[in-house]
Length: 514
Ligand code: ADP
Ligand code: MG
Image (cartoon, rainbow, N blue to C red):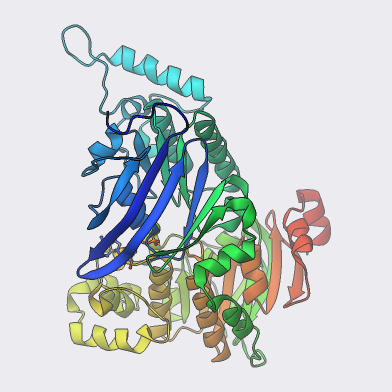
């Protein structure tokens, strides 16, 4: 095989890589090198070119120029197959596994054991799979259908495939955005295992805490250039964030704490609301002009609470008043009619019509319109786009016509937001507003939210991101195990206290809450 290492650690390098899409260059000659036994964190805002660079290494994209070297020898990578032959594996956010197959079939994809007659040896396949899973200490049923697994389990399965397939290099492109803290830890332990086997790992993320935990080296992309690199220990969190966004960071932090108007009329009032077993006896008021955050860990009940406000869940008991009108919200359509907008966590599944353009998505302001898509006039939707593009700083390469699925996460989030603003919502409920969105776009989303609050929108944010709630909230309400355990005004609390409160045990929560 070309570029086979003779001795010493494996080195996979891209040199002077360039790539354009539709005449616009998005990689301007970048160099990167991953070394066996080390984890290289690839950082950068959405749209910086990270995925494009690794897709070139993986043979998914053809570079326009530049070369790829394995241990200083140029190699030919023109297809995923070429990359795979060199031992380069990629785990994308979107899964490459086959959802209708079982775990064991999936593990042996492309490498099915055959018996002497040349037929697939199913028994051998099953026992091979068991051996692999066993050896890796992975607790998955070989007979389980892949499509029925949870996201984390599918990630682990992909890693198992990489480990079983003798990967010399593993690339993970933002693997943890859908994972819980525990699942992320499991993923990390596999990455450490791969590292110990001498594999080179490229880890793309926008989470700086993960970088501190798992990376040996750091490389920062901005606008298609490498703007910083070095051993992880030479970067503070602030250094990394600053390299990612350039000078914008401080400026946006300052803007956020600018004066804003006193809150107005209550737009949401909840009194003693309960949905078993998610939350119990919660009182909450959100007024026009304020941003209230519900802070808590996964499973604290805040998400279900938010869903009930948008008519996705029914209350067992308690009272709800929305924009002065008493009574439960019975459906999302009713919620939209009563002036409630909802931005869910999973934009792809619940929020955006990913095959439509930015302008069309912005124009789909009501749920009833969803079924009459054919009636959207391009002219009208272009107007809508022009109204919001600037204000929300929607950044794409093709303007109004760009298909939403090709936008970065942060820009997709802005489109969902714009849709509700276009509808003139009075109360906006946002779940994890910046999950899967990186620093720069985050700051923009925060600024946009603050701007609309200042104009009178009431905003309820559900978040498990401590930095986020500290940055954007006028009030922070802490939930733990289904009850409200604390409430703090903006600036009136520190991180350590929030962490402690959100971790309150059931007993403590019951004692502090209500
Ligand atoms: P990152 O992974 O850092 O978020 P990407 O590599 O996905 O960034 O994107 C870099 C730029 O290239 C973005 O402006 C993006 O819109 C553009 N881009 C990426 N893939 C394509 C594609 N297949 N077609 C057109 N533009 C693309
Ligand atoms: Mg990407």
